[in-house]
Image (tube, rainbow, N blue to C red; front, side, top):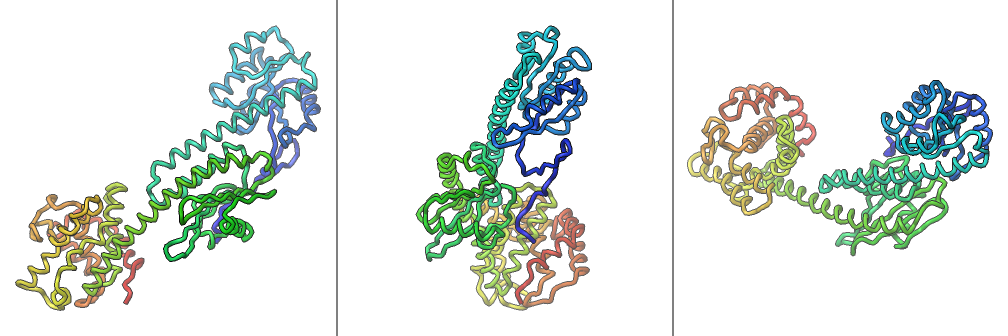
Length: 515
């Protein structure tokens, strides 16, 4: 399956002419009840080409017909509007509808009238949001072409500003969750869209690729952001479906540490830190002459610095999360259990929190903290940890101490996730009816996260193979959970497990034991 998403090519039909969407053109609406006006307009503008684009003339013979056309298509850059059509002021009413009701402020409106007395120029210009006023008797071919040039250029500038503002809004929206790993690409892509809007450049492909050299001189490259006619879903530059020609250009720029450009693309190099650099790749369609390399360099330099900071934050966060699982797996390994247990418990806690609608921040926190719930077992002697039979007397008291030990270790940290993990470690052996340990808490006095952990830990343990038992069947697990409802476990948490039993059981399939 391709890692790129392509948009289907669309064909538009106008005046029996097939025009592919990729072709560039300006659409002009002529609103007049006189057929000769339409014919003359098309004749005068038939060979015109403005800003390397041809013109498409669309005809409407009444205000009502014009409204129907504009409701279906907002891509018109300008409109010639006759004043007198089905009524003496139909054209003026259409102008009011376009600006106020339809809300199109971009289209340039040129009023044409053969009866100036019904709509005096000074009054119309003052009271109606039009861009030009022409009397038909004085509207020569040269003046028509001049008016079209001026209107299209004004429309072009308005749309450039609009695209820039829209892209900037997306950029601002993307900053809300910048510290979330999966938002890094969103931020970069919004920034790149903003760059293109500022320069009014159409691009068929645009990427920011980043390479980093670690302490062992190993280099890795990734795609931070992409936009254009196809979007790359892969984060790896080497493994992506980007064409080999593009890959070679990007990689060569990394090697040369210098910008590169030709008739088809611009590739900028940005050294953002001592061991990392970024490359901005822009592939032109056919308007290289509008590309402003200096603006691209200024903008991309700052974006590269921001993305570098975010990438470092992402790397730190990723490392911290992996270390939490590694520590949890190390504790389980000492207890002769598999590391898959901590990953399953984390996933079970995450799913339980989702089912309880506890909020994204809590869901993420309990997923990260869950692997540390048995951290205190690092202080328990191995002969107790590995004893196959039931623990009693002093050995049992020693084993129970792992809850307090884990809490004491984790409470030394001021990080909120560590504080949550401390509560998990301390209270996950408390029972809903008050029969648990270490403090014999009861009901809602037990922190919610610990109640969730208690269910998750036992649910996974029952269905897993241990040195002292075989895995229980699903029916045995269900029966046990029902029997311990409102005793060992909070009743509603048991209901969540039983109501979604297959979904929770699938976690064991997704994270199997390695023996």
